Length: 625
Image 1 (cartoon, one colour):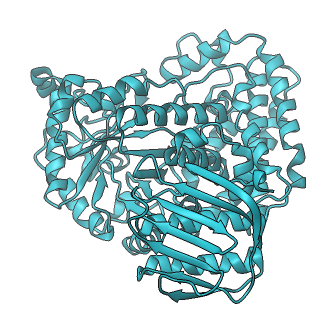
Image 2: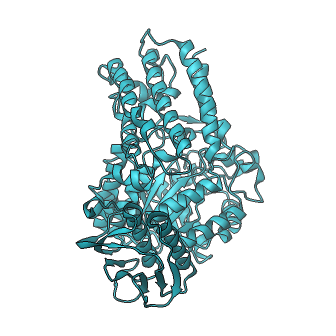
């Protein structure tokens, strides 16, 4: 029986002993803490006992149980922060913890045991603590999907049950700033009241909701409005490093004296809604820096120096509020000689999203300079529709392994929404779960059975179908034999001109994809194989027995993802000249997919951003007419 125990994450030490413990009614949970969050966790345990073991236990204050119930103690017998020792024995259950967080995680682990064994528990001892003190998830709410509060609460509950203790909502323009209503008018933004409610909900579950507002690059949504153009680096658009033209400026200019007061005003509105003492100011991908108003300054001082000087001004805005500044580390890593000049109380966020990303050398730069840093892999869900399973797991392994090696103080697992945020919500579960597991205990989880963990703790699927289905559908990206960095060919098929293979003057992103398609071997055969692969992966879907209240929606989400992948494969077949593919048929199919996409979007997300996201499908459909 005990050998079948699945935990997410697997603990640092687990010892099974002989025998079992059968839980009885009329027992107590003796809680030696006045912490309101632990009282709520004890109530959560009460509900789990009733649901899985059919017993009703009372919660009492004190450090000694008078019967064979559960005693929760916070003491110095557990020496590691956030650590706990859970003992299930014939004489009762004892949970000792270093601190309140450790007690919460011990309760979470006990609930996972109850979920699988009900009232008949294995006799065991678990000694557990995290490798990283900070274990976070960052969710993109700016391209173009802003979740409903119910969706956010569901995510927080799921992450807390996997021992994640930090959440960020990546924001460009989707917070309802009172002074800037034009920017978010069509975005269905998160309001101040909603942030405060979410912050409280997170705190109750030992999650820190860290404010996030990009503050240098990625400001193009603001520059769509003329009143903000004086703050922009360029006066029109710009060309990115890959040769793509963008119609609007991208970055704030460091040369306008109004730029820092503008950011100061944003922070005045945003930050009081959070209890966190940290703040992620972004500052990544400042692609157009030096192409416009700061050109002369960059020519004089160098791009790295201009970037750092402006970053330090933002740092002063954060510092005067008594907060710790987080920032994305990609730009400063291009100028490693400047890294030692960073203040030693910032946190650099070292990101990279391919399995082969050079985390080792990048982590070394921050470590040798004495700069605290997180490693920031990703779920690999964006620009894929159904994910990139193998890449996601390899990317997370790479990041966490090097984070441990070079002394990172945290892991921030990112989930982006580039190009319309087409991936459904549950596609990201695999990356969230694997990231949570490895950031808690790398050695004990690197070879974990991720499908079994997903079945048990993400999909709650008694039939054991959904974990493997999500895993395999996420590997569809490999089937066409066309390698795409940071995405899938089946996603990008929607955005390519149908005549791209005959064009000779394409540049930027289109030139990259054209070269990949031309270089592919036996592409039509691979695409037909891809269609058959998707059919095989999806065949068991109806056998799933998910206990989640949104089980029907979740099946619809995976059906939609599969059908979008199928359509992408057929569109590529059309592009490479397969005469069996009809434009009229593809047009009708994509019109029907748009209807389903709209319905599924609105089931979990606000309407703002939907028109822009689905507009990309409408453009793809127009090419068939």
